[in-house]
Image 1 (spheres, rainbow, N blue to C red):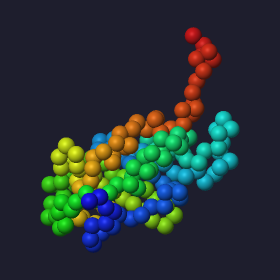
Image 2: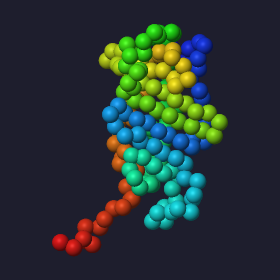
Image 3: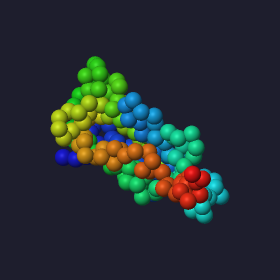
Image 4: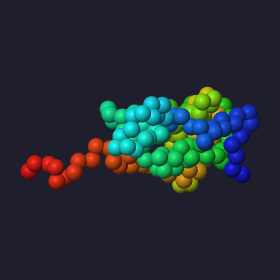
Amino acid sequence: GVQTCALPICIPTIDSQNVIYLKFTHKGQKPVEFKINDNKSQNYTNNVMSWIMTSPYSMMYGVNDQNLGNTINAAISVKIDGVADPNPSDLSKYGLDKPSLDVEVKDPKVTLHLIFGNDKNADDIYFKLGSSNVVYTCSKSSLDAFNVKPFELSGKYADLINIDDVDS
């Protein structure tokens, strides 16, 4: 049974229409971070962006809203498949001491922090909420949207150079 609650913990419900922040970090990589663009006057090439990418690049980039939407939806749609350990004495047993993926999503009221560890098997992965040590399992396929390169989430029009303008 797929669920968002496993007593006594529920995965916080994020308002998908009002997400203002997303950050995810794969083990050994720089965080990929997005914020809602509060300053709508910052329009690049007349394309007013609703999101800006603030990491891993040093410049702020526009965002491919559709691809980012898929990633946000993946984060807020993670469902608990089961409870692996309600009171773990050692999180490293599940790979949660050095997470394979760390995801944070915010709406104006709620923060969802998901920490993923080792694979349980071919289909499932261990995870926990940032606010709790209860170890759950969920389907690994729910993380597919995070196997994306940061530039695939950035706006393709950002800083593209016309090859005809480059002196040879």
